[in-house]
Length: 164
Image 1 (spheres, rainbow, N blue to C red):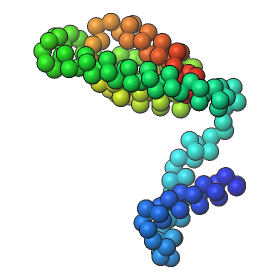
Image 2: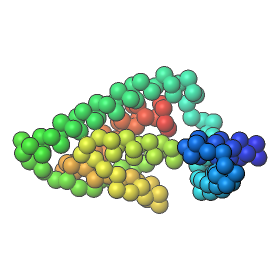
Image 3: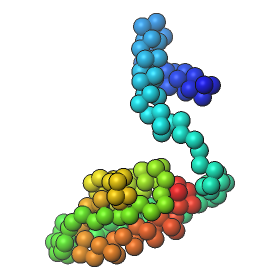
Image 4: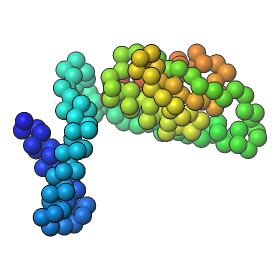
């Protein structure tokens, strides 16, 4: 109950800071908005933390390599899209590839989808929880198995250490 109360006050305070007002009606609206936000996202905000994941120290230690890998993917994706846009490389086979979610947590799926979408040439279409796959539209889907291997390597090598 304490977590809920502290979270409610914190979200309401952020709302009031954005309004720059302490008018009683604004305070009441802030409490209502905060309650609605926390109620809508309660399974995400108040989920029990997983105890079998990496420790905070290991996550912090793994983050620089994770960030560098993201930057590298963005640069490579930008280069590949630029070559296609400038007609220096033909647009071979764009399409949708199903990437298995494997052991990813809900946070890991969200981060993986966000990271995949950051790189030009890839776009998240959907996450199918029933089939446990992430559907990505890629600029070159001529070898879907290679796209899957690339995402699996990225997850195992970089993301899993930070966002399992």
